Image 1 (cartoon, rainbow, N blue to C red):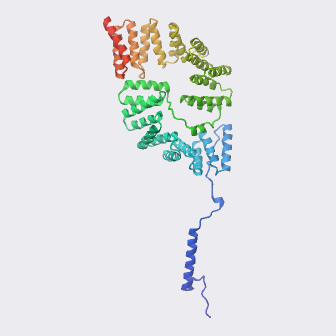
Image 2 (image 1 turned 60 degrees about the vertical axis):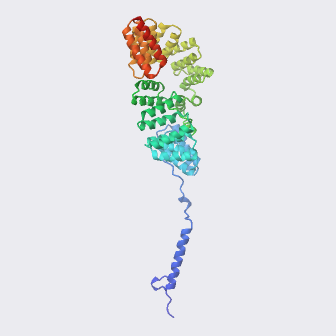
Image 3 (image 1 turned 45 degrees about the vertical axis):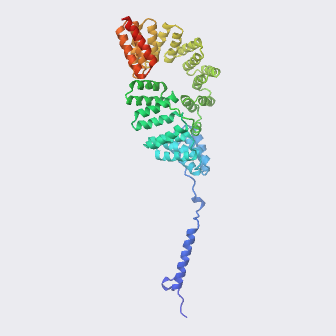
Length: 490
């Protein structure tokens, strides 16, 4: 018999055997494509956590973050553990590491608002605006009614140069929350970027009408008026900016507040509470100040601030309790007396208020605001000579205190020293951000009292021009009556 060909020998294979092998190979290939790929458990890696560098943080804070980090490493598939680590890192300004952890938590729980929103916040903090925009859009897909996310999205789009997108988001905000000042402010920013100062001014006016303490909007409105050539209007809002600073009232943001609350030192709580107070969120500010005292009973500044905070809430008994506590701790005593004096003045207890301001000045003779408030109360009681002395000390210790200088001028005129009063009015007018029409009218009356009728008439005429330009009809009528009297006297 002849030798059978070897199955493994392709050269000697018969045609039927070769066909069989091809069919088997094809079948194996088909099976391999249809079956799922199975990997070893060790190849299914959890989300990668960042390597932390905590050396620059205080030991107490480092230990807190380390504990949370250890738990996240032990449970890398637990979104709450990873997200908690992200929040702790964000609270202590470890923004890049926090973003990496929020990214991991978001992958684990893509439908949870917290991780998507806070990831967007951190990416914006890192100036990674395209990524921030994607994350914030994801957050709004989860909860379209979370206003802080839409505000931050509109801001990020604006910063990234997408004016149309930013305008659309701010417009959505004004429809959903018509009294949201920050949204009208945002529309003003878009209008200014589009080089349309009149439209910007309209939006900024709406913002400050809703929130009169919105310092940043007053500043922006001043610039818009300046660019539109309305210098008088610009000056008034520049003055409001100096009064309120760069405040930007925003709606409550529970998710971000929960992050900030993780900073548990008394100093951190005090700083957060002060910021809330500046935003007008008084109840929340009080709560954080009380937590600061709980964390460190010796933090006297918290008691000093609470005098003012409770006073603004018309809770005088609690304010007085913190006044007493501040005196016991002997911290910022001058400010404690001053805040208590403001509280007493608001209660029409003028004698007690003056006593408190005098106590503040015994501790700190250079406390300009105590001199000013004491002078105002003395003037109201008819003690003009004493009022002049304290107004003078207020402006000596704070030359930028325009109200003190203006009232000093009025008091000097009232006690028969009109030329000195006129000098004070003229110094007030040197600033660009004053209500010039009223100051000019006061200057006119000072010159009239000094028998300088030409100067008096010139100042009154300029005051009338400015008042008319600003549309202040009542003031303009008073000035016209004064000019008529001066003309009759001639």
